[in-house]
Image (tube, rainbow, N blue to C red; front, side):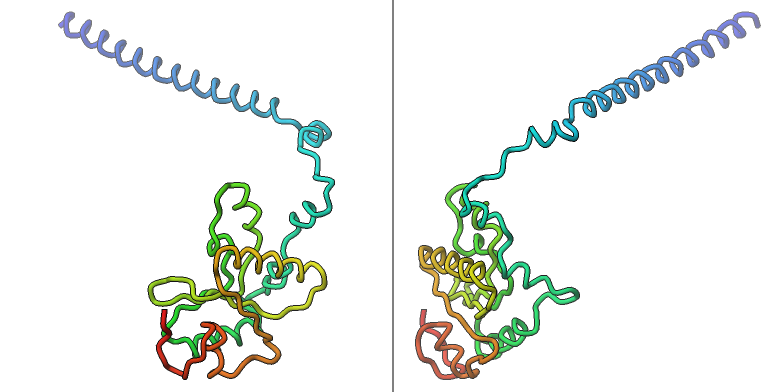
Length: 203
C-alpha cells in the first residue's frame, strides 16, 4: 500500500513539474514579445524626427504636377455611383453599338500600355481611362475618352495619356458626352473604319 502511495506522489509531482515548466515557458515568451514590441516603439521616429527622416519634396514643378491626382480621378469620385451620368450615357451607347465587343470602364492606363520598370509603373498608376473597347479575344481595339473641361491640369493629363497610348500603338477616340455621336456612327469612330450597324469588324 505504501508503495502505491509513493508512486502516486511521484506521478502527481511529475505532472505538477510539467505544468509549472509549461507555464514558465509561456511567461518567458510573453515577456520576450513585450520587450520586442517596446523596442520597436522606441525605434520609430516621432514628431520632428519623423519629418526630418522623410525625403524632401521634389522642387521641380513638373514632378510636383505628376504627384497630383489626375483630374479624371477626382471627377470620377461620385458618391453612390460607379460612373457619372455622362460616362453612363456613353457606356450605354458603346454597349448598344458594339454588342460584339467587350466594354470596360474606368481602367488604369498602366494595365493597357504596360510598363518596363517599377518606376514607369508608378508614373502611370494614377491615370485612368474612361473606356477600353476589346474584341472577344480580349485584344484592345481602342480607348474612348470623354471630352472634359478642367483647365491646364485636364489638358496635361489628356496629353500624357494620348502620348502613352500612341507609343503603345493603341487607338484613342474622344467623344463629347454633351453631343454624342449617333449609334450607327459609334463603330466607325471606335474601330477607325466605316461599318454598318451589326457588321463584323475586321481585325
